[in-house]
Image 1 (cartoon, rainbow, N blue to C red):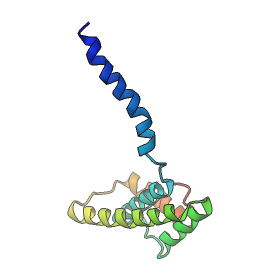
Image 2 (image 1 turned 135 degrees about the vertical axis):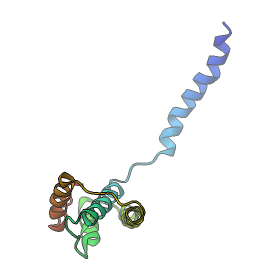
Image 3 (image 1 turned 180 degrees about the vertical axis):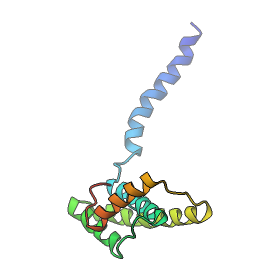
Image 4 (image 1 turned 90 degrees about the horizontal axis):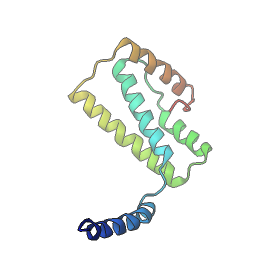
Length: 123
């Protein structure tokens, strides 16, 4: 019986928390997620000497995301995410370099070949 009074506030908190979570969390931005993956791929590609990106890689990526139907806000977020992740990856690689295995180099080179061709579907 002493357990019952303590369970009521907990149950009430659970009921209130469920709809609150739906209000607080917004839809994810898939463009920003792909931009993060692209920035990490480009960074690893440079570090592994598996191919350099084209000068207009980011612009081509943004154009591809726009063609997918991304909103201007999502595109701005994707651009910001790409720049932020690229800078962080560059700093991390400079501070704590990570060696590339031959398998990673081959995988990164394959993905970068597709990215250089304008195919961002692997992200």
